[in-house]
Image 1 (tube, rainbow, N blue to C red):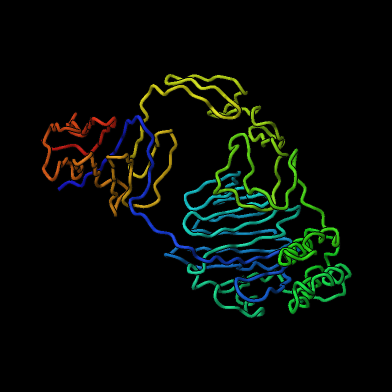
Image 2: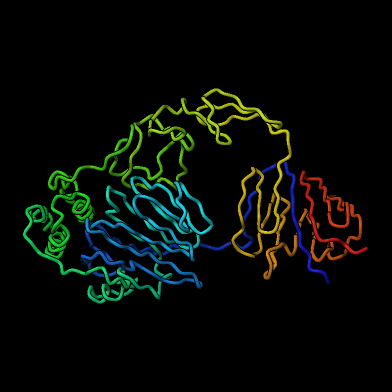
Length: 472
């Protein structure tokens, strides 16, 4: 029997969602965070924070899930800041260096979407989120490097974890973690921490005794280790004071720590204004009302009330929503401008397109694992699985891929109570082969050639399936 390959195309008068057949119930799982900031402070997943002064490369964290490698490697420069961070997600390498982001050695701009990961601005920070696992890496860029970075993941994912962050359920010893996490580099050094009296540390920790209690002396020691040699670098000591102040959320220190330490608030570009707690994704012309899912609060730069970010132009300018321009096919249209096509005309209305009815059929094409959606977007399916290609209230189209090769093995169509199966160069209706033509209450199915099957339905969906050449 000839192995059949299928290409599927639809013409619909309604939008549909592409998704996997199998649904999974989610459960609330506790997440853990490992942080590194300043000139070498590490707060592991479990246990006390500690300090390591070195310009050596270290594994911050590393683990394997489903034969996929996930790791974060860091290296600090002589200025104490992180000057190189390497993130590996399932063999895809992302490098943070000199203020640039490189994915597989190619510079990328934000937001960046990849099959395995997404990288985007997150308030004043930048975040990489894995699309395979609940795993994120977030960092803050400053002049000369990165002064704070943290990794967040779920506990059940990392039983074999190693690195400076330790194992998720085991509190590692400082010397052991440092020794086991260092990568080979004969040119670098691990230096013993130096403790010197520091008036900023002393003044700060006089105010935190009630909050930190027994941990006060430990953090005071970390402060002196962190600041030694970097007394004039706010990029080094300010993230540390901010971290401690955040742990004393109910204390007065959380309100005046910047004045006490002379740490300036982050600067915002253009018209944007700094907020200690604001939306991670600020309203903009292209997205004036971010969905509630995105309304996480973090340090951010946002527009004054009543305005949105004009992200269609450079300069970080904030304008009234009604003044927003629109974009289409790389071209910018001013508010009130009209663009026309064969199927419809659209008017730019405050950053949103207001379009007439679409007089053309929308079309989705699936060729192997390559998908072109109804709205013209293109992507590649990541796995050889069973997928829902499209569905409605009383119909569904399911495609199944070969487990050996990258082609569609079978297409199943359920129309009302009627079931059609396309596989092995045959069309089956309720288990019986359709040789040339079939007509029922809901569909007409016929071979238009030795390779193409055409299907017309009474519910507004038409599609064509291409197989291999049929033998007469």
